[in-house]
Length: 265
Length: 365
Image (cartoon, rainbow over the protein chains, first blue to last red):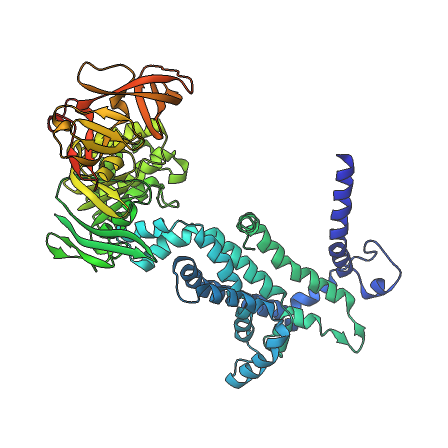
């Protein structure tokens, strides 16, 4: 009992250490960071955070990232819902192959698609907009959402659909009033994963933006100035970057467990 | 309204789920579809509802062809074996749902939902959601939703099969009363002969996708047209004696001989199957003319105050149902008796030659 607690404690410490170090650095001055090792800030400073919140080239990075992540999540769910319903409820020629092919889209590295997207979006004038990144991320998020939602939809008895059509519901009315509330958990889980994958993706986001739509993760990789690395500022940006993910996971933590139980996450 | 099916056939892959079904159901009747699992009851109901289309044949309502009409436009209601409700809506909204879709006025909805809830004793549960109810209450909610709509055709697919014994008895008694209060055609599928007898009305016996007989329930039970119908409508299984009839002697396939009397002896000679129900075979010799056999006990099961005794005559096995507790050891030899009045006789093609005496008037059965 006691030894297991020690093991758990050590493991938690091991997991928390990088996060602590990041927060620690974000509250230090550059001089202190590059100086000898200190376990907590000797000269506590919020200057790094002030800089991010006042400089538009920094805070617009967050705005851009949140924008394309939200757009992508909405597009992914809206497209995936009817697709997942069809995969779950109907049998058609090649349905199983198509379903697997959708999933195999996730297996190609994003780098493969960076070049075609870059060229395509330049040609159609989408380059350097949040839409470019949002649409590019659909490449892997739509299949993921279809996969997750199909599991949840298959958990709803087909007889409920039939009962609704016997009761006289039109399909859109049934879908909106009866069906979507039934799979709300699944939509929550799918939305979370779309959010997460879009939020952490760097390569496409950096390739498809230049100045106007540059997300925070791309900005963070370009902060080497003439004066060298601004360590404290980077650490503060890092702290602010993990906050949205933490907030979202707090809200969906119960649904995620259900998603895992269905074997679809 | 009258619902009629003409030579309806439905095939899925190589399996014939419905084989040339022709059936006419009249307004205000209760119709039982009786058949073992996989006999096509559910498929037949789905075709009647319009959820599935037949591959051949057509369906008419009051003479008007509705084969291609979608289910939403047919004014039917259906209750499934599983308890199907809308889990996110309250019981009230579940029952009200078909009325809301139909655009019925608010106070009218309220009145009808409350009436249905009262009939099915759900009044105190209207604010809960279906998953907070017991199985019986969930199924009553589904039944209330089917009734509140005042559909022309109400289909119930083994609605009581997943309920515990006590609830089943309770609902079984309520259902005929509920049926009577509406003028619809009720169709009720079940695997249990006793349920069909309890509900009354008409019975269609189903076997491998065919309707073997359709008529008033007691008539189908007492005078089945053929051996298959008699077997479908018998639980425990019908006991069979296959053999050759010559004059007043009946020779079983393994050589034993049994005497035949009266009208049985007067039936045409030839291969024949005699059949009788488990509760018509007795350990005690009846007063009337009977057929006696010396059998070997294979085991006995006591179910409360009844005993099922498994016996064998040569290679032919019978089940005997006797009132009272009879604990018999395996291997015991004893005499068992079947009153001649209770015997069915079928010819080699399975057609009925003779039904139990007085079968038309009831009484003895």
